[in-house]
Image (cartoon, rainbow, N blue to C red; front, side, top):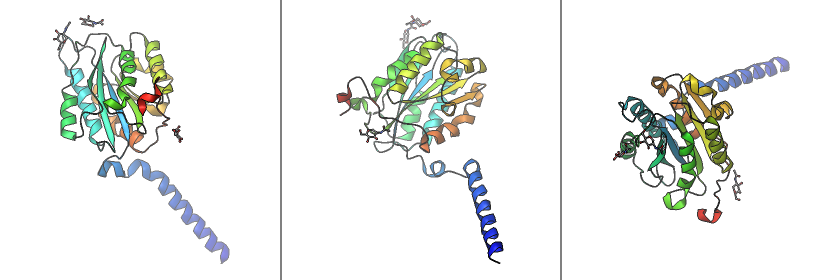
Length: 239
Ligand SMILES: *[C@@H]1O[C@H](CO)[C@@H](O)[C@H](O)[C@H]1NC(C)=O
Ligand SMILES: *[C@@H]1O[C@H](CO)[C@@H](O)[C@H](O)[C@H]1NC(C)=O
Ligand SMILES: *[C@@H]1O[C@H](CO)[C@@H](O)[C@H](O)[C@H]1NC(C)=O
């Protein structure tokens, strides 16, 4: 009697256990329904290469994806703050962390980012190098907030090693670098091949970007990114 009972309980525990394991993939997450609580300073680094003389279809697709990505986050000083830079052969900051706490406004701002004379060359390291400075408190950076860079690349770097080195420098400063790579030729870039695979999101074409959106958001919103304390060369800047 005792044994049967124990067995039954064990079987029940196994059932519960396996159903728990399956839920993460199928169930709707709290952040999907109520918004994401992440306390994070997030900078989008957006590839605007090939947008110079040609039409802006490529850039517009990336911007729409970027705007969609921000929709899930609760915005404000207690939640997420989002900034953006664009790059091609050079880079430009176009949105600071401190600026926007309203979803509609943020969407509009992101969709309105410009290619900044987007050339055919892609030098993402210029974008990566620019952003450490954007976490400064006077620009909205918060001492205890997670620091996250989302690099969206749609073209191979002209010098891939530079991109890896710049990403590494940011990581050493305590910034989590998530990389979205569009197009198979990019997947062999050192920054992608050597990154923590969970922080890398690969798609074959621009039209597939929406497929990785939830995975990126869940990575940030479920606190699974390894965050360390952010440091700059002048730690007193952070006080
Ligand atoms: C760069 O873009 C600015 C603003 O869109 C424009 O005024 C300027 O003429 C452009 N420069 C070049 C070299 O294309
Ligand atoms: C970037 O490319 C644009 C357009 O081809 C060009 O006008 C500009 O001088 C280039 N800038 C740099 C820094 O190479
Ligand atoms: C960040 O620094 C604080 C204070 O020095 C420390 O308590 C905390 O553990 C650090 N967090 C990480 C993730 O290193």
